[in-house]
Length: 369
Image (tube, rainbow, N blue to C red; front, side):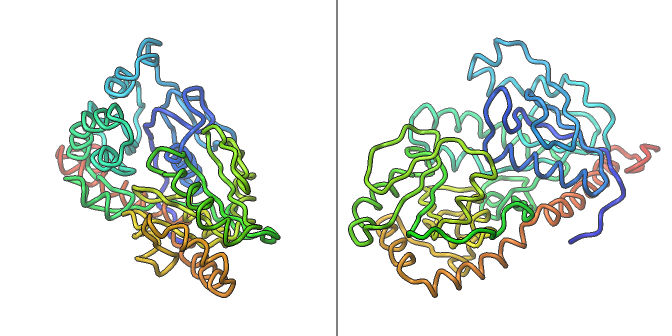
């Protein structure tokens, strides 16, 4: 746990927040929310500029971003012109700006840190529709421009850093260890948990088919628990959950025997570290994020798609191996506590302040020549 830095005024930029009016919040939204809270706990003043209001439990301030309604109704305008409104917004006088997207039009002398949660080029490669693929490819140049303009640009994994020019550092995603932790007895029946979409890069349908073809016939008592926004499909042994409150998801992580992640691509893979923090071993396909988080299989099981179901079945049948992986996973998850992540961002903020000061010939904190 790092020692908190001298208090800073931090302005964060992100279009959405958890449980907002635009979306209910994806993984990035929850990461930003938790990071901002961790920074406030470490003594900093954090303001997030967003289209959404402050979510429950926010310890930071939220300032609304004024955008004409037409820009919210048009997906093209929403995706590509939103950065202009961040440029025009009154961002105050923070010590540092921390952008999580849509910062390609930002300019000026304020120190700027940019976080990349994956890359559009990788998203395009694994997109399931041509519209999604084209959208990602069109956005990729703006992503590169954002990295070039930042004083400090970081990726959430080494895989992300290698794919983007001008990104020279890695600060991983975090997990709230005060909430995600072992705390319940495991389910009395063998239970496999999956969180994500069926037909996007999360590839829940691959697991659904593997469960029906390989796992359920060999282990008739097994259940597959799926947390998804997709419509349920009637299958024996499959329990469907819609969008859940965080505490309900934590309960499933705690009670499941195995967390299964058959994703084609992950920039990092937050649900995997959440599962490990709850004492549940992980089986994942060897995508870039999973290989990094699981350290090439040292902290979980990596299995290619053709034998994914077999790998899950083998782990369900091996209690000693599950216990060993759970212990290793708990140790690995501690490396991603939000307090540690916040301390690393403090270092990034100080570096950005120094670089901005040198870039403009001013003292990095006072602004004096």
